[in-house]
Length: 286
Image (tube, rainbow, N blue to C red; front, side, top):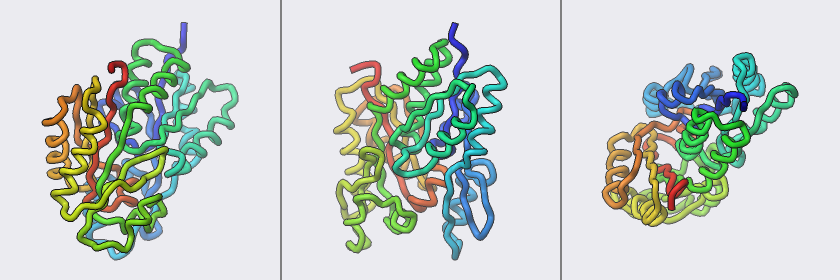
C-alpha cells in the first residue's frame, strides 16, 4: 500500500485556505524585505496590508525565495507524520525557490520527496496543486500524484495586465516585455507566461480595453475544451478581477471559478493594480 502523500508549495501560489486544509498542504513562505525588516509572505504580511502600505510607501520592498531551512522544516514535519512529499513550486525561471527545495531534499536522503517545477506562478501553480491534492486524497502514490500534477500543468495558462511595467522592470522579472518599456504611459501591456517567463503579447490604449482584450485572448485558449477552471488574480483590484472573470465565463462556462489576491511576494514584482487570469482547460477531458 502506498504511503499517504502531502504537498508542499511556496506562498506565491496563494491557494484558497480550504485547499490548504483539505489537501494537507504546507506553505514555505517567500520573504518580503522592506525597510530592513524580513516579513514572511502570507504569515507576517497579508495582501490587504501589503498593498495599502505599497501605495503610500516612499521605499520599495524586495523579495527573497524561501530558505532551504524553511523548506526543510516543512519536510521534516511531514516526514514525522509519515508522509511522502510532493513539492510543487513557482517557475524556476522567476524564482530560486525550487533550488532551495532541492537543497532541503539533499539534506534528507531518507525521505521520499519529489519536486515539480510548474513553470507557472500564482493560481497557475494552484490548479496543479488542486489536481495533485485530489490524487493524494484518492490514495494515489507519490509518483502518481507527481504525474497528475505534471500533466495538469500542461493545460494551464496565465495571462496578466499590470497597471505599469515599472515594478516588473525594477525586480528583474520583465522578460521579453522589456521592449514595451519607454512606450506611452497610457498604453496598457498584456503579458502571458511562456515557458516559465513573462512575455509580451500586445499593448492597448485603455484599462477597459486591456481587460476586454485579455478576456478575448483567454477565451481563445480555452474555448471548446472541458473541463475548465478559471481563477481571476489581482493585486488590490478586486472589482476589475470580477469584471475580467465575468467577461471570460460569459463566453466559456467554467466548472470552477475563484478570485484571489496575488501574494505580497508576487505583488512586489507586478505592482498594485495588476489583474489576470490563471486557467486550466482540457485536463482529464477534451
